[in-house]
Length: 85
Image 1 (cartoon, rainbow, N blue to C red):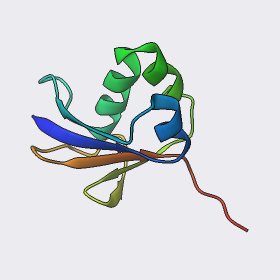
Image 2 (image 1 turned 180 degrees about the vertical axis):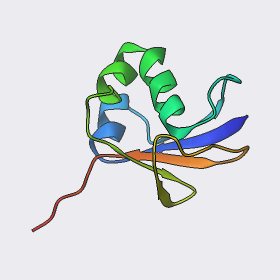
Image 3 (image 1 turned 90 degrees about the vertical axis):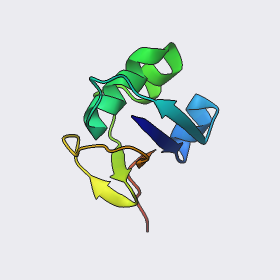
């Protein structure tokens, strides 16, 4: 399955890219699985996408949970929680 992954704010800066199109292994079928796979891919991803870090995930522009299913052509966005004031 192929997906487009978008990174926003501090994630974009930490990873040095704002988007990438990826062919996922067959075992990666959920948003949380994608995060784990990306974190295991390299040191930068491991730090930026570590399991303990607070991140939001959106699939096709809708907030998603880690168990949200992915599909061919999905757009998955990762971004830190936003606070305002």
